[in-house]
Each structure stands twice: as structure tokens, then as C-alpha cells.
Image 1 (spheres, rainbow, N blue to C red):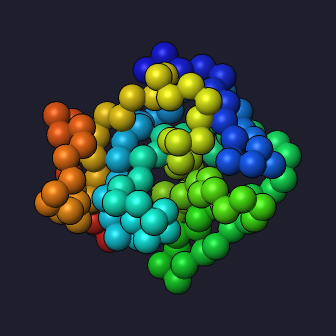
Image 2 (image 1 turned 180 degrees about the horizontal axis):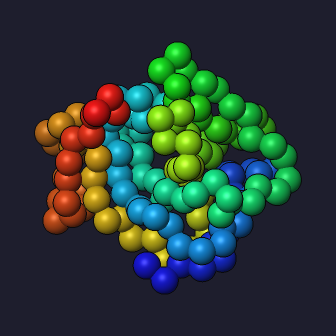
Length: 135
């Protein structure tokens, strides 16, 4: 991937971040939770270890669901910022659209492919799998 010192910010610029090092993965998610939280038919993320991510500016607001998912967002402009899951505490997934240089972050896979709408055709050459958070 070759990504070093990546930067990004929310729509209004109140929340910015810098990443040290490379992402563990970059991919598209088709789960219902991500679709409803984003309002889009799929969400694309880059996954990092939390210690790689430094936020500056305003602190992201957070919403935690009963099943252990925490979503961060800008309380000023509403931009979705990050996804964290209590079953994977060593990961933070940042919304791909927030990065300043998307060319350094090509998606590598799809997750929850069984929940993808049949009419959606995007990056179909990428590996795809369903993921069971309880396994």
C-alpha cells in the first residue's frame, strides 16, 4: 500500500487526523449497521491500530450500540469518522472518504458480502467474504 503519514478531516474541518504507518487493510463493508449509520449502500474503511491515529481539533462525538459498536462522528458537520468494535479493541476503522489522498488507499476486499444489494456492482474483482462477529 505504501501509505505513510496519511491525513484527513471531516467535512467542515473541525476534526482532523494524521496516521503514522500503513493501514492493516482497506475495504468496503456491506453490513446493515454500516449502511444505516452512513446512509449509503456501502461504507469504505481503512483499518489501523489505535496508536497509529492522532486526532486534532475538535474531539469526535461517539455513539455506542448495545452490541458493542462505537461510531465516532463530527458533532459540528455530522461527518462519520470511525468505527470501533469491543470484540476487536486493537482496531479503529476510519471512513475512507475523509482521507486527503485516496490514491494511496485502494480497497482490497469486501466484507458482509451476503448483505450487499444485488444491484450494486463495485470493485467486484476484489475478494469477498461474509463475517460473523460471534465466531
